[in-house]
Amino acid sequence: MKRSKKVLALAVIFLLVSTMFLGACSNDTADDTKEPQTDENSEGTGDELAEAEVDIFQFKVEIAEKLQEAAREFEAENPNVKVNIETVGGGDDYGAALRAKFQSGQEPDIYNVGGPQDVEDWMSKLEDLSDEPWVDQALDGVLSGVTVEDKVYALPFAIEGYGFIYNKAIFEDAGIDVADIKDYSSLESAVKELDSKIKAGDLEDDYPLLEAVFSYPAKETWVTGLHTSNVALSQEFDSSLDSFDADKVAFEHGDGLKALIDLQADYSPYADSKAKLNAVDYATQVDEGIALERVAIIQQGNWIYGGVNDIDENVAQKLDILPMPIAGAKEDSIPVGVPMYWTVNKNSEDADKAASKAFLNWLYTSEKGKEYVVNEFFFIPPLKGYDNLEPKDSLGQAVKRYAEAGKTTPWVFMGYPTGWGMDALGVEIQKYFAGEVTWEELISNSQAKWEEMR
Image 1 (tube, rainbow, N blue to C red):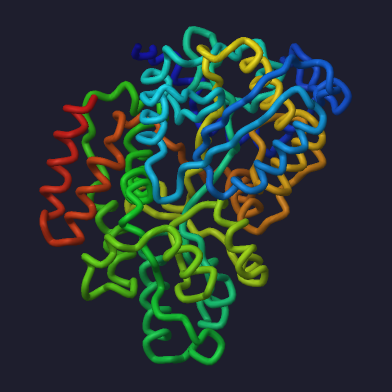
Image 2: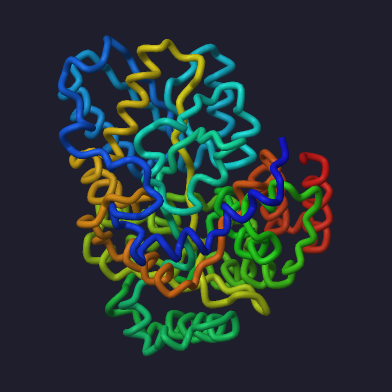
């Protein structure tokens, strides 16, 4: 079910980010054919839905608690409906867990897909959501990866951006001006300068736990095999649809990717024993790393804000985002895209499907739901109609700043062959750190796996 290259124009990420903040939130757009749902007509009244039970299987651990709270609000307005939520993510493989869930016969009513490759893999289970009220409120480009033959099969979670999240105070106290970091060369120089100050003990009084510049979680192959690789491969492919259509991967910027990976490893606590990076997980990097000011920079996205804020509000407010530059390519930008999509199981009971659709519509278009999306989940909304709900957290504001400046690159990893990023490339990176393969072998092995898995 390969898509025509003509569809690619719909997926150009520039359209997404250029309209996201520059007027796209207006409800008076000429091409809208439906009015946005208001608080009055999108929240349940208690007698609109038949008795139903909605089972949600979702991946985003950062919102698990607040999503439960939102579900209780929805139930209060729709007492005939029970909403159950199971979260599998973080260090676990959501895709594998989802397949196991379906194979067990315990099929969820609402679950997550990641873009064009997932849409192909799950097509037999996807409900057509084209007539849902939120569809015409979607920002330009966010539905292209989940649209097939003019039918929309999923609702985007959010707009997210990632890069090198850093502690502004540490850089300021080290006398390093981040305004000078515009490409790989200037980033490398800043990292070396900060490393020398850490090792000399110059920052010890203010940051007694600070031990290294970076923490790189090689155990999390979604970080390495998906997000890190995307920085290089988004220079090779124009969109997730482009990578989805590709039978081969050239690694045109393989040297730049190596430099970026080596930089994070060489200035981590395990610079002299890189195999130990393979045991570093998300919690070590985020909760026990940047949140405690044990490291100054991590590769992550705006989704970490809530978790860091729960640990230390002061540290959370110090965070900002630096680019992840690939030398010789677009070096002053961050990847911005849709992390995952909500979809409905087409094989669920009719009452459960109706309640599932109502819940998603309530969550993203009602006033109460929108408050959760922006102020509790810390999401940058993928829909229009959020005029008065600007991101308040430091990382959401950083993503907005890059988007407004047009300094973004697309997320193309959603079009990788199923499992390739995590199970092939991510594992090869672990072998590289363990000294089991050379970089050249990593590239050739990963290229062969792409062709095989495609």
